[in-house]
Image (cartoon, rainbow, N blue to C red; front, side, top):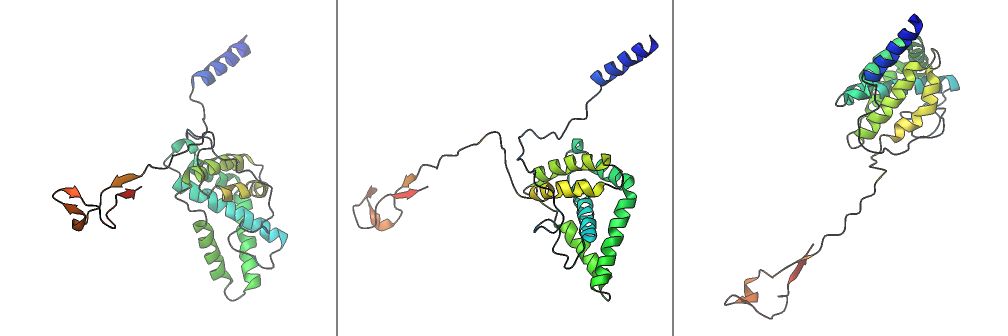
Length: 221
C-alpha cells in the first residue's frame, strides 16, 4: 500500500511540475543530421591537421565539440530553456578526464609537428576553433542544435564523449549556416511599379506635362 501511494504521489508530482521542454522556438528547424565523421572530412575541424593520426583527429573532434558547446553556453543565454550553459558545465564535470586527454593529445601533436612553435600553434588553433563557431544570422539554428547535442553529451558514458563528437559534429557545423522556417513557405510577390511624372522643368508648362522627348512617366519599383 505504501509503495502504491508513493508511486501515485510521484506521478502526481510529475504531472503538475514544469516539464523540461525543448527549445522554446516556435518554428520547424531544418533537418541537419548527417553521417558520422572522423575529423578528416573538409569543413569539420578548424583548418587541417597535416599528418594527424586517427587518435589525434579524434582528440581534435572532442576539442571542437567542447569549443562549440562553450560558445553556445555564452551565446545562447537569451533563451534559458535551452540550458546550454548548464549542459556545458555538466559536460566539463562528467567528462573531465576525456577532455583533459584530448587536450594533451592535441598539445603533443603540435609539439610533434613543430617542436619550436608547438605551444603557440596550439593556442592559435584554440582561438580559431572558438571563432569558427560564432554566428549571428544562424543563431537560432545553432543554439537549438547545440542544446540537443549538449543534452546527449552530458549523458554519454564516460570515455565515450568522442562518439557524440563523431556522430553530431557535422550537424553542429551545418547549424552555423542560415536556414529559415521549414514548415511554411512564404512567397512575397514582386512589388508593383509606381509611375511617377518627370521632374525636369522643361517637361512642364503652365502646370501641364508637355509632350517632349524624354518626358515620359517613370516606372519606379
